[in-house]
Length: 165
Image (cartoon, rainbow, N blue to C red):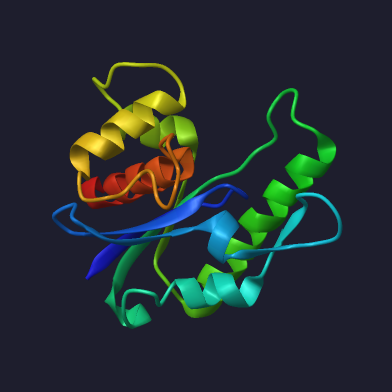
């Protein structure tokens, strides 16, 4: 049995942890669950890829809980960007409901109060520190990345939140 943490943003991720907090695996949203559309760097979610990613680590019956980060409008964020974020969040809600998976939806301020308690730093750096410390077997710099991926860190922290619930 394992717990999934999902950061539903375009640069988000899915992280699967067992009940002891050991990493079972991860999926980057941008590389695996989206496709390029048109010119430039515009990307769109692919719902079938999203649904398939849930069974990356075994049958859906082995998922004990999915912790999905609630999305909301943020100051100074563009309309198109916010719409895209809302679409991704809505797709995840629909897919998780259709699959009948036990799901907890949590606001960022709520999971960070619990998981990041006592962690030094500011902003996304706190989640990166917490994920690298508490889930050391999770590669936060996949591929050729030099900077830790904040979507992976957030997804790991969401899964840790689920373990503590």
